[in-house]
Length: 220
Length: 181
Image 1 (cartoon, rainbow over the protein chains, first blue to last red):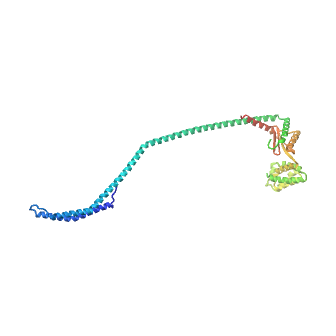
Image 2: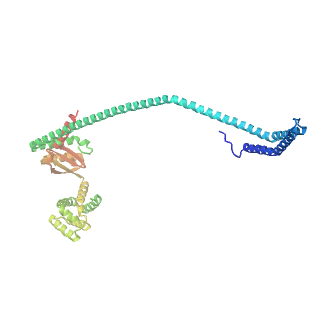
Image 3: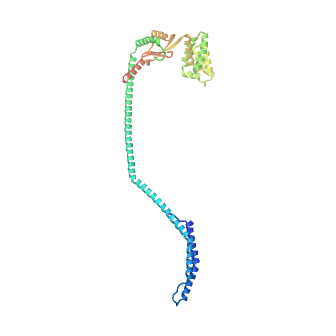
């Protein structure tokens, strides 16, 4: 809305108009009073007589007064009034244009919000669908990962169990073989006599002799 | 033990013994002395810096007199006592023996046997070992019942194993491996 400032040209012009009108009224007031007194005097003097026609001077002075008044008004008051009305019209047109623009902007915003409101539900549904789809996918992935983890744990457990069984079997075999060797050693040590020892020495010598040509070192 | 020091002393001793042509005799005396000094308490006392030089000398003199050693070995032991090197006597003795064997062109072989070996068998064994080593072999026999039967020979850093114990261990390993499949 357009606001008229106290110091604007419009206010100054209005004040000028008011001052001119006041000055004119002050100038014309004695003349009007003199004319009125003159009229009444003439009317009183002819009280008992029949009415007669006014004098030419009684018509000329009011006319001159009127003409002066009209000239002053036309010369000084009318431009101010004209400018005031012109400015007021321009201001009014400007205000109307501004209001029109504001209205157009408001209507555009309204259309935009209407459009948004129309798509809001669809957007919400689409977002909800996307969230649901994402959640389902993540749930599916979690299930898949859980299955893979379970399978891996199962395989690891199976491998560990197999390894444990194999290790137990290996240890059992080694312990059994060691026990057999120990028992055999005990039996042999009780039965080995000097003759056996002599035979061992002979066998050792025979084998050493056969290996003599290819001895290169290290434990044999 | 400082091997370099032991070799230095052994080299000096064998040089002195070689001048008198008594390398083997000195080696034998050193071997007897080493066996005597194998007593840990005696070795510790002779090698301890806490014991004064005179006390060590007196102790060593008693040892020397009981072993009827030659003058060369007695003097050598006295030098070791003065230098505080008695703790390295065992290494010196081994180094001397190795040098003496090298000089005589012979090698030593340690024969470990579950039971005593007859002289004929030992001679036959020494013969084949000399064939392997390419020089004279001096066998030293040790009895080790843990071998159960048979024998092992350690010569020039090589072990020749013909013991029943090792054969049984191989048999046990083979059994463990064969039943694995």
